[in-house]
Image 1 (cartoon, one colour):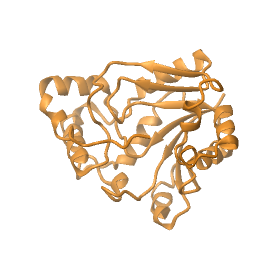
Image 2 (cartoon, rainbow, N blue to C red):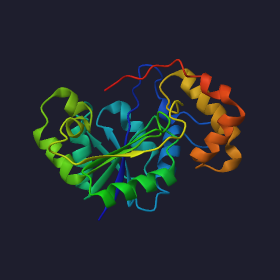
Image 3 (cartoon, rainbow, N blue to C red):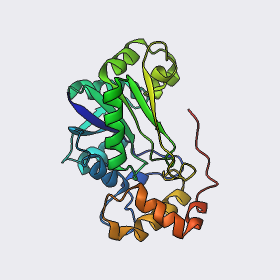
Image 4 (cartoon, helix red, strand yellow):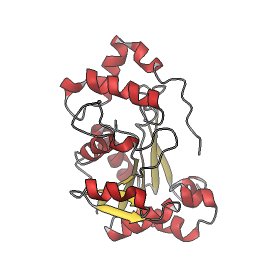
Length: 238
C-alpha cells in the first residue's frame, strides 16, 4: 500500500499573488509551501509527498524552486485530471489532498486521520471541527479513477473531490470529527490572514517547525484576540 500527499499549488492568487513562496514568519527561513512540505513529510504513513502544479509558465518558478521534491505538472483548470495523473504516475493507492495556502497542517492529526481512513475501509474521508485550513481529506485511488472517468460537471473537474462527495450511494464516505478550535481561521487567502499567521509562527517559533494544535490552543487561551485579526475574512464555498 502506497500513500501519497499531493499538494495542489499554483502561483496565481487574486488577493495575494505569489503568497505560497512568502516567508512565514516574515524574514524567516521557510516559505508557506516549505512548511506544508516539511509537515507532510513527517507523517509516518505517508510514503510520497508530491507537488502538483500546472503547465502554465507562471508556475515554472515552483518547479525550479522545489527540485528536491517530486513535482508533477498538469492541467491548470482540470484539477481532477491533474490529481489523477499525478497519483497514477507515482502509483498511489491512497491520496491525501493538501492545498498550498494551508501551512499549519498538524502531522499528528493527519496520521490519526489516515489510520481512521484505512481502518474504516472508506473511499473518501474528511475531517470536521478543526480550524479552517487545518482539516484534511483523503481518498482511495479507485475513487479518484472513477471520478476522473465519470465527472462531467465543470465544478467536478475543477474541484477534486466534489464528484465523490455528491455521490454517497456510490462511494463510502467517512468523517473524522474533532472539536479543536473549530472557529479559528488558519489559512492564507487575504493579507490579514498572512498577518495573523505571521504572528502565530513568530510566537510559536520556540516550539519547532511543526508545532500542532496543542500549541495553538495554548496560544489562543493566553491571547484570544489573535483570532480576531482575520475573523472577518470570508471563505469561498465549493
